[in-house]
Amino acid sequence: MIRYLTARNPALREQQLRKRNRMRKIAKIKTIVAYILILFIVVASHYIVLVIFANSEPDEAQNWATNYLMSLGQDMGVSQIFKVLLTVVCLRMMINVKGSKLKKILKALLDPVTVRALAMLVMPKN
Image (cartoon, rainbow, N blue to C red; front, side):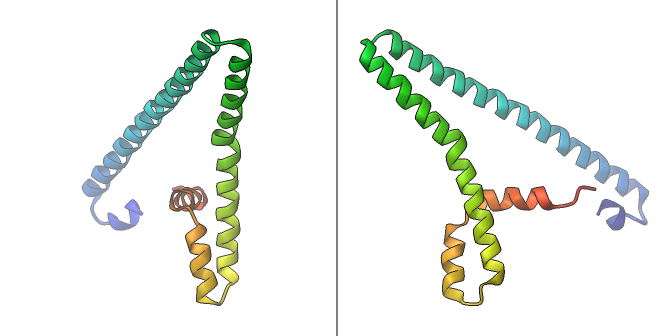
């Protein structure tokens, strides 16, 4: 795209390429910071569960640990996979549907963030 837009101006092409490379570096830094924050949150929540586990009776601690691990698995695994699968199925159905009422219902079931992520995954890289 940059080559096409700046075919007659090499200086503008270099400027746009530097701008794109800078944006890529910033995006990489943001990704690393996000992963560090996520790791910190997961470690902190595990620590809280261990503190509650250590300060309570054995039966109560067992229930806390079981419930925590179940909700962690649901939040990080099952619900996200279900959301992506529902989005893919709804998108595939929307292609073949003629009626506008069913299309509105399917559109309401879509998660915009998941649709955007899927679109970015499918787009070709330059």
